[in-house]
Amino acid sequence: MFGFRSMMMYGGGYGYDDFGVDRSSWSDKSDAALRRERRADGLFDAFLKECAELGSTDKSAFPVTKEVVGADCHLTSACYTSFRKRVMEKGCKVKRREATPAERSASGDTRRGKLYVISIVCPVHPTKAADAKAKAELAAAARKKKAAEAAQRKAEKEQKEREDRERMAKLQREKVREKYLSIVGEEKDELKHKQPSPDVKKSSTSTLDTFVNVNVTSEALLKHAQSVHDLSTIEISNSIREEERGLLTELRKKHAKEEDELRSKMMLKQSGLIDNANTKYDEIKAKIEKECNKKVVSPSDK
Image (cartoon, rainbow, N blue to C red; front, side):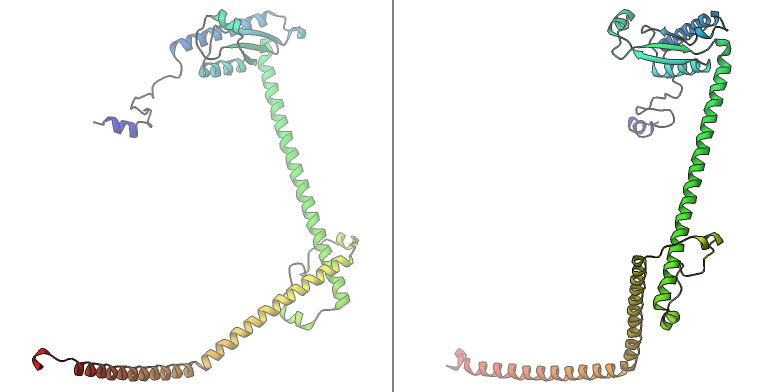
């Protein structure tokens, strides 16, 4: 039903590869890989049995570390993931290292890829492994909770510090403005045209702020004076532009009729001048044609 091109176009999904082959039911582990994984599981079980034979009360015997899986039992990536999960479920740890050339040669494995030797660490007696794992998980959860609480406290502290800085900066601006007004006063025009800025509005500062000693420097006063001056010049420019636009609008409305009449007169004058020029051109053309006809003599006139 579908050709090779269709399989190439649509084969990538629904378990099909680029060539239209259905791989949805295929396993990521070959039979040989599964046999080696089962062998590794057996070696691990034997290691756990050896650890279980040690005294459960002898704490000095643990942790026990042993190279359990040799280079002759190669585990693919999928098999190693499964094996590692099973080892960790038993409360043990797993490590692997690349096999040495001698170990590689002794394994008899001729594959070109890397070979590994897997070590198992049994931290406690196998009968106590479940408890140790549960305690480790509880300790990890406690560390995670502690870290989250520390992060929350840090965020709250930073938020409080930020709010304190903003509050003090606002209080500083208010004190500077009060000092500025006590020196220069406030003009009536400013009260008429200028809306109070957020810093000028009455703030909801706490009563504790009244006991805060805020030092108003001359630099702060000069900076505030500069900002007031800049705002005043901006308001003047905006007011003049607005007034200019209004006056020009009224002027255009007033002289709109005169402009239309003047434009009509000029168009009429232009039309008359063009008509005169056309008439003059026709007269000149007629004179030229008449003069040329006098000088031309036909053969029949001879």
